[in-house]
Length: 378
Image (cartoon, rainbow, N blue to C red):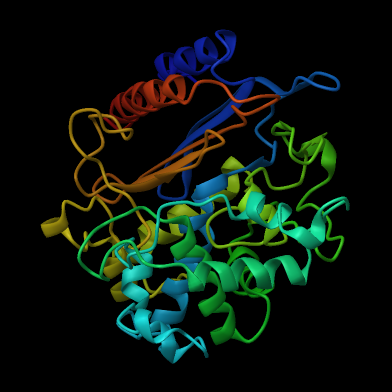
C-alpha cells in the first residue's frame, strides 16, 4: 500500500534474512484497515507454503491479553468478578499461605508466582509416565494446576512485579469457575463470535478438538524434539500443551484481521463507547498502569512502552498498551491516535531463531509503521 513502503521493507528484509520464515503485519485506525501485508512463507516444511493475510498463527503469550485479560474485563464489566477479590473466593481449596493473592495481583503480575517453570517437562518425567507415550489429558491438567498452586511464592503478593505464566494459568482456572463452563467455549460465544473473529480459537488436545481453521491456513511452528514431531495446529508452548492446549498464558490461534477486530473493540471502550463488548470503565482500569511504584510496566494484562530500548519502539505514545508472544507475534494499541498494530510470525519454525533478532526487529517495524500511519492520516 502506498505510503507504507518503509515498514513493508523492514518486514521483507527480516524474512529474507531468516528472522522468521514469514509474517503478516496489519495497521488500522480504530476498525479501519490502512495497511496489511504478508511476506515470506507460512511453512518451510514439509513443503513450502506462502504466507497470506488469511494465515492463522499460534500467538503464544498474546493469549494473555487477547483471551484471558479480555475475559476478565468482560466479567468485571458485568459485575461477576471484582478485581480485588481474593483468589480463594472463587477457587475452593486455595492454600492459606496464598490467601492475600487477588485477581488484580494475577492480572498485573504482582501475585508473587515465579515467572516460569518447566511444568510440562516435569509432568513428562513423573514415574508413572516413563516408558509410555504421554498425551495431554484431564489428568495432566489436574497435575499441572495442583503443582502450580502448591509451589512456594517467590515474593509476598503486591510487593514485586514478576511477569508470570503460572499466574495466568491460575487466573484462567479462576475465570472458568466463574463462567461455569470451559472458558474457551465461553469466549467464542461471548467475545470472539460477536466480533466476527471466526478464525480465532484454541485447540483442545484432550478431546481431539479441531483447529480454529483448516490446516492449510495454519502456520506450523517448531519441529518439537520433546513431542517428536513438527507442530501445526498444536500449541507450541509445552506447558500449555500439558494443560491440553487450552490455557491462560498461551494457546490461542488467530489471524491479523481477527486481532485487529479485538484491538478496535478495546480502543472503542477505552474511548468511552459502551456499544461493544467491553464496559468503558472496566477497559479504562485495565489500561491503567497498576504499580509504577514497583517499576512495573504492566496495566492489567497489558504491557506499556518503556522508553529507550522498548519493544514497542519510540513512536508509540505513553498511552499505548500491547503484548508480545514467544512465537514472534504482537498486538499494540494506542488510544490517542486510535492505532492498532498487529504482527504475526512463526519465528520458531522449523526451529528457534535467536530471540535477539526478533527483539531488534519489533521496534524498527513499529516505528516505521507509526511513521507511515502518521503520514497517511495527515
